[in-house]
Every structure is written in C-alpha cells, then in structure tokens.
Image 1 (cartoon, one colour):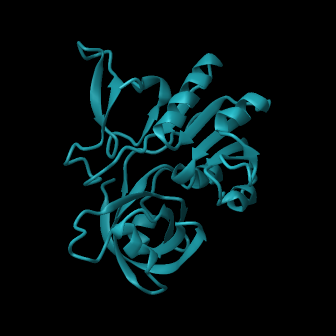
Image 2 (cartoon, rainbow, N blue to C red; image 1 turned 90 degrees about the horizontal axis):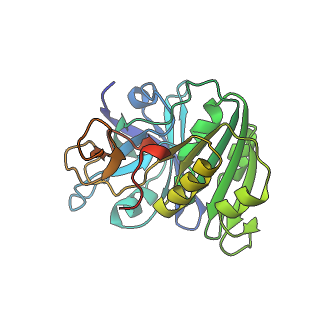
Length: 260
C-alpha cells in the first residue's frame, strides 16, 4: 500500500520532557493504512525555507479515532515549527512509509529495547504483541512514555546516564544484570546501541529486529541518502545497499553490516 498525502488536523501537541513533544494528529487515510508497527510518516513544515519533510516514527495509531501519534525531539527549525502547533492547526502528512517490525511469528517472550527518540515506535509494537513483553529503555536523563508502556501490560526497566531516574548506565547493563526470558528482540535507537545489542543477542542465539535511525532527506527512497549495507548472498560482494526509508527501517540485526 503506497504512502498517502493528506492535511492532518492537530488534536493535541504537548511537551512531555525536555525538547520532547507528543502530538496527536487526525489523519484518517493514514491512520487506516498503517500495516505494522515501526513504520513512519513525513511531516511537512509550513515555512517555505524548510522544504524537506521530517520523517518521524509512528508512536501510536488509533484507527477508531482515525489518529496517529508522534513523539518527536526539537532539534532544528523544522521540528521547532511543529512544537508551535496548537489544537485544530493543520499539518501536511504523508505515509505510512517503510517496512516495520514483523510480528507474524509465534514468539511469546518479547524484549523491546529503545534508546532516546528510538523509544516511541516501540509503543505501538508493545500494544500489538501477543505474549509477555519486557521493555528496556535508555535515556540521557529524563525518561518518558514509561506509564504508556505499563498501561499496555509491559514490564519496564529504565536506564539513564545520570542515574537520576532508573538505573545508572545503559540498556546493555540492565540486560546483563536481569534474567529476562526472550525468544525475539526488537530495538530502535542510536546505531552504537543497536550494534551492541545485536552482538549480545548473537551470543545468546536470540533473533533481533532493528529499526535503523539513519539520516533521511526525502523519506521516500528517491535521494538515496539513507542507505545501509545488508548481507546479500546473491551479490558477488556478499552485500548490497538498502534504503533505510523504503527497504527498512527495520532489518534483522544479523543481516546488517555494522562495521562500516
């Protein structure tokens, strides 16, 4: 199903942590087209000097209310414009885009690992999974969405670099300390975290799906600015380039070539 473009209407747009905002958007066509957790949308700033859209992961979908939720970080002019939006403001949205997490298997013990702005897309995933869900989240200092995960029945562990909230350290520290039952892992966050988690999972023979946070420009597979290397037995070099935005953003961790 191809990406749709529509004028969404802001339902709410609230700051939930330092530079972090949660926005609910009424966008019927897109809300009813999301096929899997881990897909993303493009949000378009209104100012003409910010031409390119901003790709942002879908945090939650409510098909009955026909809304999508995004949780985003203000890092520049484009996202700064989003933070000023108020209820009933219009915003242009396209999506859903990309291939998300595969939840079609019969796994029952799920581990979700998120870091920073890689945390939000795991929320919709936690809602859809069947079985026991354990969530391990890492933040620099101020956690967010913890109660949302718990609302859907997940057991949540939190690590922060400062140690002010949760355990001091990172997500790998928690995984090494806790005895968590796992038969499938899923993760989104910065590449060093994903790489470390993939190594940990390989040591324990646990499959892991990773959502890559490569820098995207167009978000629709045209600019080829977000390519990553993926193992490819059909290619003479043993690998091929894949576009994170359209081939991903989710790949099996064992298929990604990390040392690049």
